[in-house]
Length: 211
Image 1 (cartoon, helix red, strand yellow):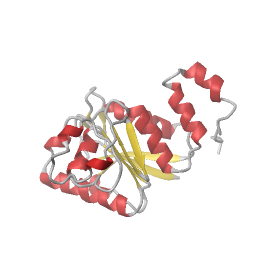
Image 2 (cartoon, helix red, strand yellow):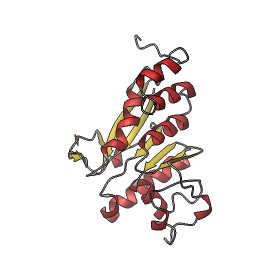
Image 3 (tube, helix red, strand yellow):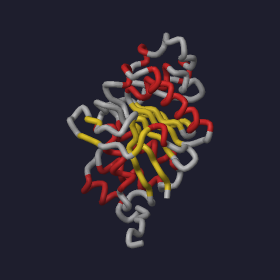
Image 4 (cartoon, helix red, strand yellow):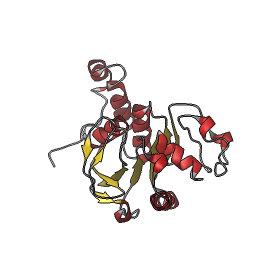
């Protein structure tokens, strides 16, 4: 079983979480995954859509050795965290990168990585390139790609309006989900469930959920 942790802050963007978390919980699409939500404390976090989530653990309890992926979800509060919280997140991401683990960041979480030198070694995207291009910690403008989502090795970045593309790229980065299953998941929300079933139902590697 692979363990994936979603990092959420107050006023997180719930739609940026929904596609990926539901896909990883759908045993017809993915193999066995465990997902948990982490934050700066154990207080309820309220999304931009008033969805309330009680975190499973705090940032200091995340173990990169037993966690296969860290997913940073965007929202309204990434730019006004305390210095201590910013340092904690930066060091956590560095540990995951150093251990060759999946790191995903969408919307303002990708912006956060960019301005803290964490995208200087990979291809990437952000919501608005103009916001990062002159930042003193950002040194990788040649690797910026103006597209929905970018997967480079095990680092995934995406624009806030592209949670479906983000989810698909994270699943690809995890490395054990058949591409046909990822395409099926993506097509459910693009061409519609009925058409996706017609196109992929006989090709999908359905997992045995009776075990």
